[in-house]
Length: 330
Image 1 (cartoon, rainbow, N blue to C red):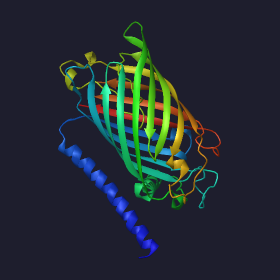
Image 2 (image 1 turned 180 degrees about the vertical axis):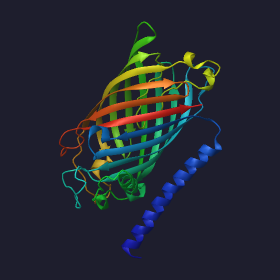
Image 3 (image 1 turned 90 degrees about the vertical axis):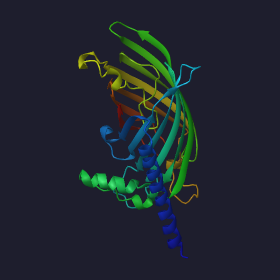
Image 4 (image 1 turned 180 degrees about the horizontal axis):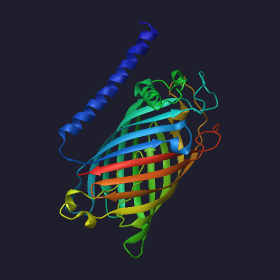
């Protein structure tokens, strides 16, 4: 059997795995009657004025109805998410490998999470499994979007990372440390967040903070970003008996940041077989974020502008991108 035939068989097998994951995801949702909320998260560098590096992220997350233990004030819930990340170099017109820039890469994944929330904290375990390479369909998605909006087509996708199975197991904690109450139901909250991830996709340790200033804030903090469990949203059914003007509406401003020590990043380090393009990863990466969130019973909207420092040695300057999320609850 020729090498090309083996390569094609491998690619179709991996793509079949993606379809199987999607089918299992859909069948799980259809079979379950315990879905409590749905969250759509979109991240894109267009608000930052670029179309490269971390260029797009999409995630669909379903949260199951929470439950409580009789001997504990905590609430527990599980989440299931399907997502995709897309990375490209700066020069989309280059046909050959851009030696001093990150490789083309796509990552499609399925993530399962278990979460424990109290009035002032959220503890989570999450396992993410997926595919990097052509079988992630990142090239197909980006080309389809660029064609839809009549944008220039990236010419270097044939240089992307090859097919590889990816995994990451992470543990995170978000805790509100201080709350200052003001008049008219307004408050200022300061929370810290810690995250540890182990896997061939991402092995890192992160420590961050978030400051929230607003009206009628709820406890159980969690960043409104890809990979984070959805924050609590009031149930629409709970307030259905009240007129619209009496149903609680919540709004707050957000300011935050984090620092990460990165020991592994497949999207920069390249494939494990050593045959793909790679760049020199920076061990320390920092982020700053600012934005707002609004919620009412059954719905929440949040938007953040994020600045991320240089992720690899050859990178000139950091990157800005927008992070938008919608949560719907029964």
